[in-house]
Figure 1 (cartoon, helix red, strand yellow):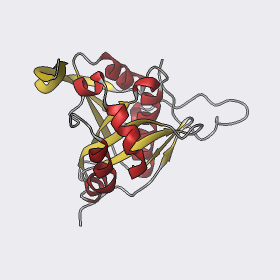
Figure 2 (cartoon, rainbow, N blue to C red):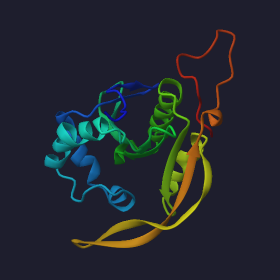
Figure 3 (cartoon, rainbow, N blue to C red):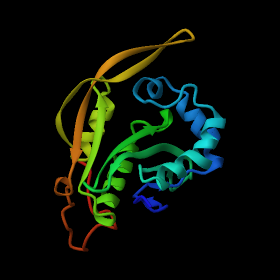
Length: 211
């Protein structure tokens, strides 16, 4: 049997990352009907409620069981509202490395949710699952994703030339063009621990985001 991640949940200061549920389908479909999701991801277009339900019911559990990675729904603690999706993919169990990708709902952008979710997954990978490397690949024009990589302490390792396809809509036609990818990595030693204060560590959050 292939190694695989356990079905689990990850809690951060504001967010809960948990397995997808079929009840998430309407929120997922609404979140994915966005120009930036179309442009920067390789998710199906259109991303329908039927596909979202299949993802939760069948595709995501199969992805985890086969050892390829894991998919998390990202929700707010306060409201339980769905704010994003995080996926680990291309997992190599011998090298203890995996790649992370994410989507943030349009209404939740600019709140720091993406770096908080990615940092939470990184902490879980390194401390609980004994992983040694986390990778991100960002399209050359996707400055928001590059900022997320920088905020979590990622190191830019170089450019993968013409390694991605960027999509856009012209009327009802989806237009595709080639794009470079920037490769980022995060290792356990890249994580920045917070400064201690007189009362001890601040809560359970052992790593901090960079400005």
